[in-house]
Length: 137
Image 1 (cartoon, rainbow, N blue to C red):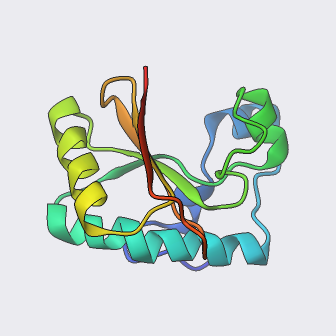
Image 2 (image 1 turned 45 degrees about the vertical axis):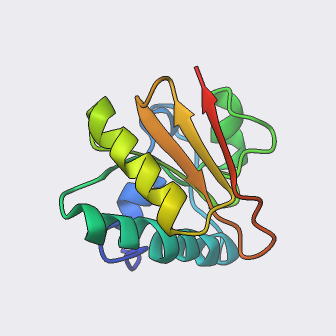
């Protein structure tokens, strides 16, 4: 069993994918990828979780290149590098609150409102973050 990615994200939660399981795809991140995963978890997710005070669900975190291709992810997806996480509190109103808090309180590379706050995509690189905010519907 691997150590947790952060206080509120287990290793298994960070690499979980029903598609990977059903298709027997290895979704194991490299040690360098785990470093990046921990970086976004400790610098974005954990401060957000502390502020929110309730569970925040991880919809998607790490994706191997093969998994990302099968699910139709972008070829340049930051999920492949362990730099992106899709999160939700399972309400559009709550997701909008998370989105606004992230935008105002932590550093990020990309912050995306996905499908009218159905979930939020947030990414963070080790350096050269672009602070891009946009909507995908």
